[in-house]
Length: 443
Ligand code: PLP
Image (cartoon, rainbow, N blue to C red; front, side, top):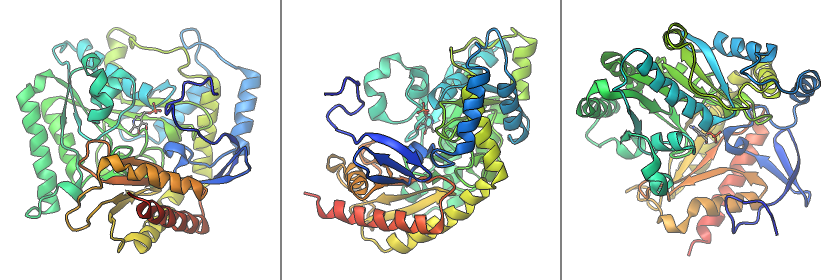
């Protein structure tokens, strides 16, 4: 009997004992091909000797120094590296310990920014339905999964949700892609005007929607138009790149593919590649300057922010990504993965959509391709596929269906950037078997 308060209390999980490259091994010696990087975390694969050496060296030299007493060379170097490769105008980095913390800090930074410039009446955020921004109360508030929020609702901050950009399901047959994007931007503007634009702090978006929809990019021009709206109404644009960032979509930041520069950007997951718990908020200079010339402090902080060992891990991960051109590998292997998914599933009667960018690809399952009718959520098809995949030694990120019953179940693939073509073949073959086995076993 486990003493751990597990997330899924009635599920018995295999115990992982070791990992190397693309594989995790359990106590029975079974190897699992990590086709999702856990939750799109492992970008370098497991057990990279250089990252382990960097962490060990840091640990031996300086294990911990609280950020209210000291800065550290490793944290400064990491921040410099992130800013050297950041979207235009971003000048400062606030280091945290994960994705929810990064979003939480970004929300508070945005609010404090307006308090500092004398606009304290701005209290409201706008976000999108079918988005996930983390599980702490602020991040949960901006997230758009009704089922995750329901029981915590009275505690959540002031947010309204607009439509996500989800072309497969939401573009009307009478609309062009461009008209669809314009309609969404008009909906967003209408919401801003309804709330009163001078009451709104910011708009939170995942540039490529991850956990909730499964690697759904927006249509061309949508984010650029959103940026223009934010500028018109003086509202901040907060990009959540926790899942889709740090090379996952084939460019270091997903926003690079959108001709859009956010005011604040949250990153995590691939930042430390799973070697340590680390996240960060990247901020535009104009935001940092307001704090610097105003109160002089960000009213926020956690004990482990800027942890030297986490910074050493992230710095080494980022160096390896650059040295080994792994962001480009994510782009190129991503194209190959998409081709293989197309070959395996484009005529499958229950795969309605195949989408994604870089090594961030997904399939959406439907009961009927023509009508796009999802499977009934209570069938939990995505969980059944994950189970069948695990039985075949394949880890995939399965979601959807139960989120709001409107979209289909989806299977997200986000393998480490070190994958090779034969690994992609193994992933797609095992996934196809798992999908068919799960469908065949449906009641
Ligand atoms: N934001 C996005 C887009 C995410 O996908 C996640 C996690 O999946 C988070 C925030 C929360 O990150 P964490 O689980 O590290 O707190």
